[in-house]
Length: 170
Image (cartoon, rainbow, N blue to C red; front, side):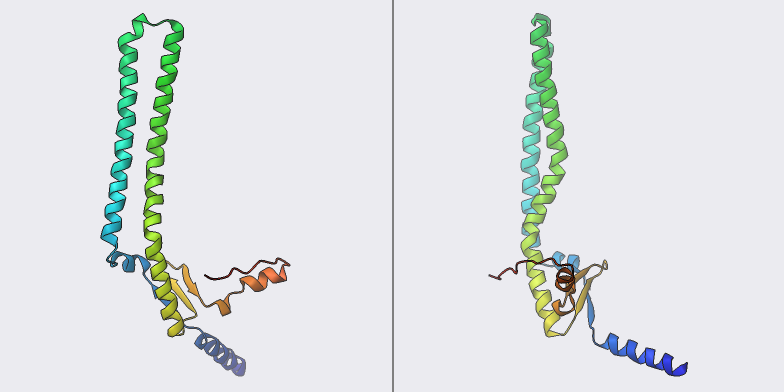
């Protein structure tokens, strides 16, 4: 029994010694990059553009409501219905603009940060390969780098009978 325990311990240590796992705090690195103030300024400017567009639509909506309330007495039933539909459409547009604003801000932020994340990724891969890391975990426990020789994805796809075309690197 002792021999089995020692053998298991030896196998565990030798298997563990074949891998080198590191961690990285991508958000901290990102916060220290010199491009971040420029990205933040561009995101703020984009937010101001969205706000200006919303205000313009709000003013158009307010003008429709004001025109309707001031001229309501002189409108026919058909004209009232048409004006009410215009107001409802303008109100719906305002709601859509407001709902999409945060989504558009996130898309813009992601678009501006993508090159910085790519820059971090290139550096991470270079360092990981040079120092022999097989896996690098982000501090939130998600894997951000894994040595392709330990990746079973293609082997599993082949086993399942799924073929994929290999992409050529540019």
